[in-house]
Amino acid sequence: MSYNALEISRTPPFHSNTQAVNSRTASGLHAVPLERGEPILFVTSELADFVKVGGLGDVSAALPRALLNHYDMRVLMPAYTEVVESLWPIQTIAELPGLGHIPGCTLGRIDLPEGLRVYVLVCPELYERPGSPYLDPEGRDWPDNHIRFARLSLAAAQMAAMTADERFEDEGWHPALLHLHDWQAGLAPAYLRWQGDETPCVYTIHNLAYQGLFDPAIAPDIGVPEHAINDHGITFYDRLSFMKSGIIYSDHITTVSETYAKEITTPAFGCGLENLLAQCHSDGRLSGIANGIDDSWDPKTDAYLACAFATNDWAGKRANTDHVRRMFRLAVSHGPLFAVVSRLVHQKGLDLTIAAAESIVRAGGQLVVIGCGEPAIEEALRNLEARFPGAIGVYIGFSEREARCIFAGSDFLLMPSRFEPCGLSQMYAQRFGALPVAHRTGGLADTIDDGVTGFLFDELDQSAYQHAIDRAFRVYGCTELFYAMRRAAMAIYYQWRLSVTPYRRLYHQLMADTPHRLGKVAP
View 1 (cartoon, rainbow, N blue to C red):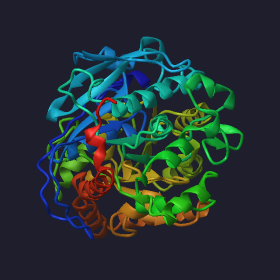
View 2 (cartoon, rainbow, N blue to C red):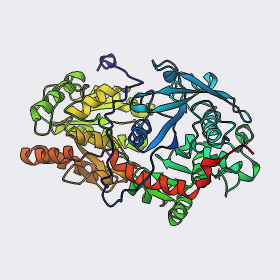
View 3 (cartoon, rainbow, N blue to C red):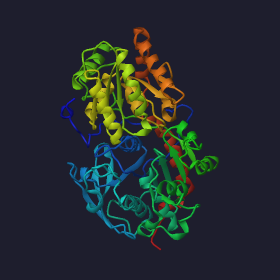
View 4 (spheres, rainbow, N blue to C red):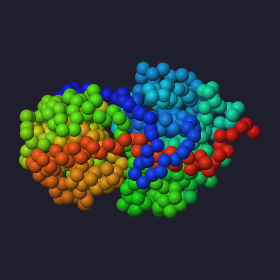
């Protein structure tokens, strides 16, 4: 297809209809009485309001907003080019000093809708670059990523450790707790502990496979003390691990689904950290809290769709299917439309989908793919499109608008992930009436009811995957059952408000354990 046919959006607008969270409990959880307004700093390398590479960007945009009714939530992130060039003005708040080879930077503030305040690190030499937050335009890691994200961690620690006399001019705001995300923020609790600060830290692992590993020679450049460079510190198989730092020095570690929290304590999913994580679990320091999706994922109101539709409005659903077929220049068909909306990386099992594509087409189905990632996978998908013109469409890139249209227009979403900490795509698909076909792992196992809201397969091999696809075809051919599964999928709404209660419980426990942290004064 012509790749110019799709509109590109590197900085998709974030839509949220955040409503007040009531005290109704989520399943098995008890509401926690709390005073509102405790200041919490949410530290992330992505925010979908400006830039996102994967699910972290969506989580970072939605979760703080969902918690705003209970806390003074503020976000800290780098001021990438997309941030600086956005329409949101940046108010200068403070100058933060450097450490080692980490440069000093300007701390700015942006005020976003729903009352969310975002602190941004303005440091052009580190963040205002082409490419993605992590990779250059050729898809290679930036060689100074250790400096770039040590700067993010250091800023978070500096904001938490400031005494009353040092605090910057922003209403004297000072975080009572840091909520840190993935390896990019993994040094923040270490910087705090190395200077004797006990500000509580929650560390969320979104994907253990990306650990932020670097040569130990960079330790002096980012201010790592010698006593921390060993197996009991942040050394991991002769490398320095930002991820391990976050695990060791934080008060509590969360992952983004209950199943993934169990999986990462095993050799199959622990990426070499399974023993440490098993100890964290034994100590009560590891838990799983599932992600959710924000209120904009509503087929009745989503302005991105070709046609809004509600449950049982299958004509409206079909209008979106027809739109997707035109978008990808597919032939008119009465067969099922399968979709892939994903980063194109080995983890996502794209090799299995590529191998299954011919059987999908031969059985009367069609396939559309949107995403970008590893060059070899991208090339294999382009070749697949060339082999089956009119039946397979591929777009290498990402557009929020078109991704939503694909969720709304497809009948089935393919997710044969080798591992999936949580996954959001299956939730988006279910909300828009597309049934996921997925490997039973991580958050996929937690959010898909096999034979009710989608299809799961156990063994990660081509035969098991093909069997699940064949099941989807059979259900598609039985209209009454297919529509019943659609209705069931659309009724399951994994809202962020369901995650609020467990996070409130965790925050409350950690802040109660360190009551003196709000009373820091200059010595």
